Length: 237
Figure 1 (tube, one colour):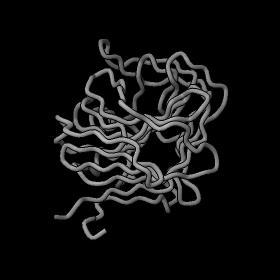
Figure 2 (cartoon, one colour; figure 1 turned 30 degrees about the horizontal axis):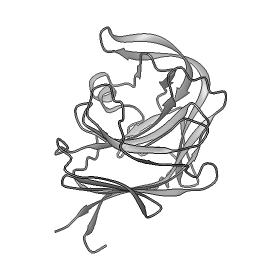
Figure 3 (cartoon, helix red, strand yellow; figure 1 turned 135 degrees about the vertical axis):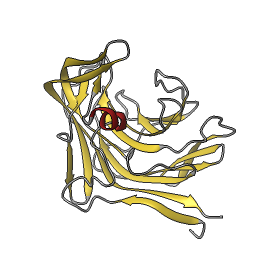
Figure 4 (cartoon, helix red, strand yellow; figure 1 turned 120 degrees about the vertical axis):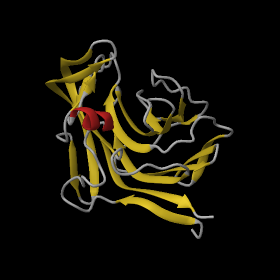
């Protein structure tokens, strides 16, 4: 505690999303087009805050079956209008806060169903590298993967993971420590993964919370990721 200095803290005590801290869309959509966008090939689109609610000092991102036409990004054709069968949400700190080393902690609850994932990752001005603080698996049991993505396809090749996570009414605490080229992950104060001598992460990165539907999946219900609070601290020398 003596080493820590709080850089960013949010516990969602207001009635609306704090625009000084968060964008309800991807950073580059806001920076370049002033609006949100989705991706060609995803079953879901990201609404501009319609799938985000704040109540009882917690923020919830909801993924649900809902037909919608939305702006979508294609790598070769650019922006297109696309039809989607699901909607979801995203929030990020691209315009307000970026961290380079330090500790990130988040208390959250996940009410998930097979075929829907939830994630928190750190990213800079390019799509890679990307640090996945966590990304849930989408099978019958809710599991978690963490790691560093080094390719433009944004596919995670995690060396390790943790098995079943609390799903439903239980909150749990995820912690990520970034000290130089060493990365450590823990859940409920229990370490579960360490990566050492990680190259290419010497750049400030912002936070992205996101949920979505796995390609080719057809979930029939609604899933939620609820964030009670998030805190980022630096290590004062």
